[in-house]
Length: 186
Image (cartoon, rainbow, N blue to C red; front, top):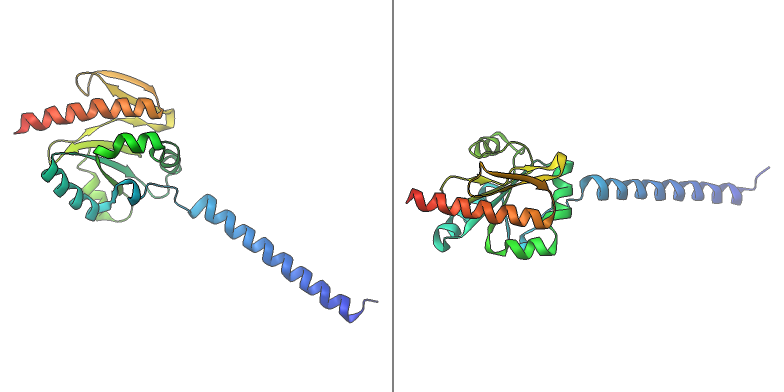
């Protein structure tokens, strides 16, 4: 027969163990399913429609290119891309000249309509645009870990394995093409 003290102690041990397990489960869910390892404003990013309006005004004032990053909220490939590439210090330094806008496409129908005006084949997508001139895509193919590196036009080039180096090269070429298109529009 168990003593009353032992029974009470056993209850506390079971309750404490259950609490610890619940806290660990919550931490797991937070870190692996909820926490956004995405881009942030301290690295120069603007967000969604309001951010686009700010970026457009700055682009027109300073004649700087806008770098759009289109993504979906639940896209694991997007989250990995943010963590591995977009948050890479070398990439952050390289893109400091761009006015960067992260646009989450699946929040509401208005945002989906806005995104349809851009040449997005799949998410995530990176697109360079000068002011309101035609946008030019880097044509990321993340399921195959590739990026399109254009030559003289967006139609000529090669897919290359995705890395910070190849993405920077792709952005450099796409920015040149977008700049030429913008100059031809004027």
